[in-house]
Image 1 (cartoon, rainbow, N blue to C red):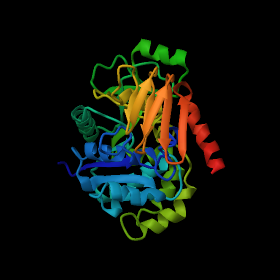
Image 2: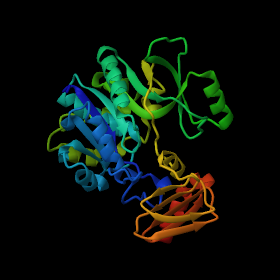
Image 3: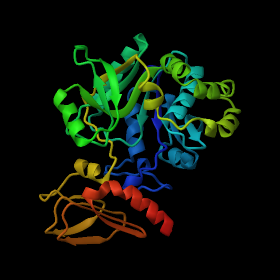
Length: 354
């Protein structure tokens, strides 16, 4: 296993579209969302550890989830968990982790990966990741793994690559914001667009140079703590300074500005499990396309539903089609799948009632 390989595992999100299962106290990355026997963060960690030494995987998360991370990943040492005292999007935390890694190993190449995505073909993922590592060890490149689009999804950003580039790894022309349906359809018809899955690969030299060039303020802020990183002084520096960083994504801060951006079209299946509907796609279904997790059910005149219960109870449904039915402790959610994007709003209303 290559000691120059590192990973930054992003595990700070709340996953509010999966309410009432995913909550601020216990977000979706810490749940076994598919009833597969492992939580999403456990699956992601296991997948990365096939190529990357366990001690080289850093987990970025909010302070409140420190105990959850250590409980679910017992092989991880406390110093591998990087705690964000404030939510500042992806650019500040990636720079923070990158500067720590640079001090550990200036020859490092790293992958930045969300902890809550679902990838079934782990061998294909490892092969694609190895291709990216090999490229980034030789080239000054900022890379991403682009996901082959299967339909005109309006919920993802897109990556436009140079269609004249015959190499497996393509030069990126530009990143595109989430499109409307007609624009997404045109992207698929043209053929040189990929979904932005939020998986990035680069050498530590390339990413720190990019921050120095494109984000001098954030860079200066975190460089002030360079002497403290990987020492007992690090925690105090982060507590005192982290909240002063600009709230900005890595896409906006770096990837949309840099010219040395490349993409490898992924050969593995991928699902970001962003909504109940996307979870439904990955479940085994009955003959009427109902997906059931952790529940005993009697279903009559029911189709295209997703049913989940954490309690040991029988759920009887008649006459519901295309619904999300979730029974969790003090909440019963019965909601049309067609309106699943509104669950984030409903979550806020529910929190007010509490």
